[in-house]
Length: 115
Length: 113
Figure 1: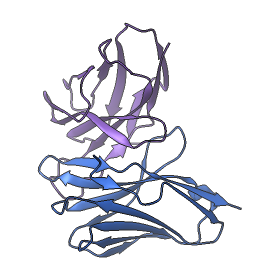
Figure 2: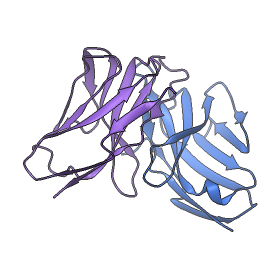
Figure 3: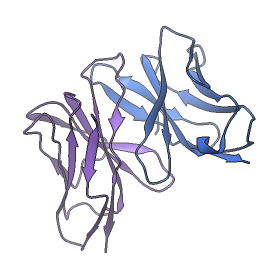
Figure 4: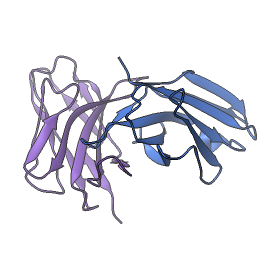
């Protein structure tokens, strides 16, 4: 089955540690996205990548980093510079269409808790 | 601020009733809109989409209406069922050339048996 996987589902981190969240897709999508969701709120864009070896900052990129070395993978690193990292992190992918049918398919999410 | 917003943060209905969830958007250049459903602890799931050259689109038990004059989007769910209880988000293609979506804050729909 095609889809997006995120791992792990739950992640605990001590303050001051960097942590990397995994996102893999086998939908052959060019574009991939990372969102952060806080309780009772909508999705905020962290980083996105329209093509391999290229990525752009979203609305809340500070304290995060990404890489896009392979089409199917878009890992997100939450660094110690992120002041409030506890949140639900969602990865998504889409076809590279510009303006039309840009439906994004979401993974199941990773819940990060900083202890 | 948010370019996409919702008029009602919570909505409670009885099973079998029709539900209407509203959304306002601010960018008249947005040309594509999506409704997502998110159950607790899960990622959002696509429900239905609509392009800006359309006023209405129907799916299975769901209808999306787009009023470009007042920049308003709505999701209608017919014969609402307990399984429809979730958070519903609208999203707009705010920057068409970038392929990015901007999401509203969501409406919590609760369906009572």
